[in-house]
Image 1: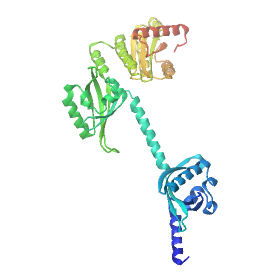
Image 2: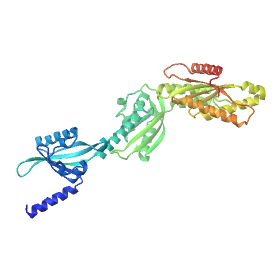
Image 3: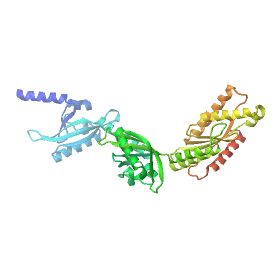
Length: 418
């Protein structure tokens, strides 16, 4: 070997030793003739360890078979190939590599396969995370009970969730590609055009819009639209809306009817039936998977308080009990005084643990009040809880009667004395 050849060999060795990619050469029988430093570090083997050996002597059989079959493709085609190969790592994890394999011959005509490989495991993990995120996002959209859609600058629908299409009497395929304007009451088309310009120019908009169902019914929607521009080639609008038609009807009824109890400021029987019947109808139509409970409660010992301390103290006891109940339930629950010493609550969007949590919290509040000894009387309550079957067609009055009977049965058994 002359000096020039020696220098070239040293240069090649230096180049391959410092290369950040894995490199290797094998003969036609799959035996290694060369690997670089990066390969040695990856497999914790040296060239001296593996020279003249095939993958079947060095790797797990499945990995060796994978390498062998891909090497055969190169020899049989006589062309370079780019593919992804997997390599087991410590602890059983699988790593992914982009590998370019190519055929070549030496001066004697002997055939070899050469290859370089780059670790793309992190890229694969990121891609999988993105796919999981997209699946999660898609599940949220498809399972949402609200109206969710995306549309372009002109209002052409790019995507829409099943609940949105169903709420208007359509299926998803009937709405895709259509313009939102087609579903808006024609009287509001000019208003719709103005709102479209607003969201495009200001990046966000919210308000109310009147839309028509397939069978011609008019529904009112409260919407919030956002223009999305990041990480997308073409900007689009993401819109979310809720059907507030029923709530508007309730509000109109509330304006004309005395629906609250003068003593406690809670809803009275009429107010409860008005709101609870509508809420129950919504729950039966939307089926969110959450439960609906009816709680019937009766104060214990109110007659004794009236007889012993007078009716003013009796009224005060009712007021204090109403305050305890109001503090125990959410604003979304419907609480009412039916009259006398009777209260009722419709608890919506409840899970299996709700009953126990509600009763324990209520008991603690009553015990805390009694412990303060601020008044000459103690408060006590008997309750009946009824889980409403949303598949049932019973009226609210019938459900109330059942909860009432449950409460009085518990009152007789003294099992629910708080």
